[in-house]
Image (cartoon, rainbow, N blue to C red; front, side, top):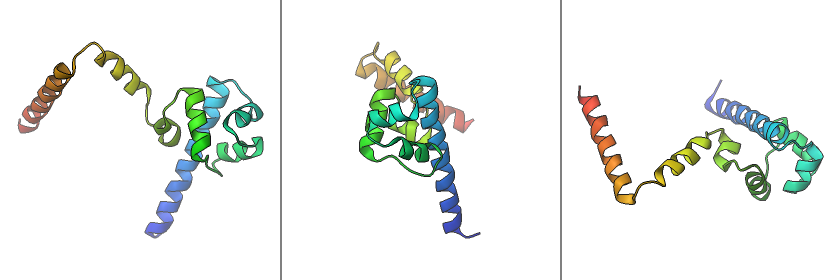
Length: 118
């Protein structure tokens, strides 16, 4: 199997996983049927079904509407990256000044170097 075939297979697998995430958001978080969500994000129910099956992709405008409706980041919808950790981290950091955060990051870098050297 050549590099191009592997890349296409990988993209198809990612598209299927993306479709599963979108279906999960629709069913388990938004509690909508395909027709309802499709109307909200500006696509047909049939096309949303194709997206959820991993046979289509949302355009930017529809993705943005889904992001706003669900509260998930585009990174989560597209790639499955955990967006809750970002929100939690931002909430924790609200309690500290920018200088305190920068100092903490510098300490973490030093700890990392120390651990690597031992």
